[in-house]
Length: 391
Ligand SMILES: *Cc1c(COP(=O)(O)O)cnc(C)c1O
Image (cartoon, rainbow, N blue to C red; front, side, top):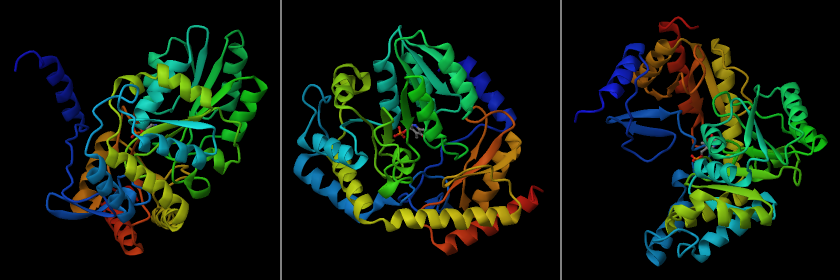
């Protein structure tokens, strides 16, 4: 079809730079080992931290919900698409997060966009860490509030922004709890203290901390014992929780406001019964099977120590997200291809997802990897690292 030549030009540029990527379809369930192109690989690219994507309790709950309630809801939440189980999940999440209320959105992405676009207007300002997730950036693009970006985890720069914005009605400081590309954790205790001093609201996006940090995976607010001092927590149900969805955990008044003004909530159909039921079962698993989180952290320590011993630069991550920093874009993509050819699926990440010259392999272990899986993966990293003269 004619008309898209201008897009072809851009795609051809990407191809020349070696950063054009095709989608890689799995032929197996998500898990510690997966099948791509008929070949078994060690999976180090998913956010399925706890292996819950096919946990038997979640699968069974989803099956029963399909049998009892069918496959879809046929409406947005605010018209006819709220089933009792949607509200049950929200009550359960509020109890889990120890907040007054929660509201579930279709995804973490839409939760961020919904809350940021709704809560502020021209009289307000949002103050955002420069490395916040794309969905926070898009949410900020949709708000009428003024914007300020502070340097990554730089409290001096954040304080400067707070000093210079005192004339606004409301200031909302927003940060990722765990930064998705480097795996570092927000300096939340200091951020909260600063915001209290300057009377600003705090919002933390715990997408990569949900199910990973805090008691039973309650997130960074729990990890840092900051209950009651963070105004808005965003969680995802799509990563460690293993299913799909996002939610805000906050005050009851915020829930009620978002039911009226949160645009993705208002104008996009609610989760099908199987998704809701699996999410409900996942929270039960977090509460009753803490061994998954223990195994995740044990595997994380083992794999990171192994990469470090081999001489790789793995940055400053404090979470299971393990960047193997390589720098050069094209080499990183070649590195990822060679890992794949040798039996490891670990995606290369390059500009624009990370800054130019900061390309890396991003590896995430999960609770369902065995030590043998991880030792094998380390041996393959060593082989490719030597071939590419990185180590
Ligand atoms: C993945 C991610 C999201 C989006 O969550 P989904 O449920 O996958 O839409 C939002 N914020 C951060 C920080 C993320 O890493």
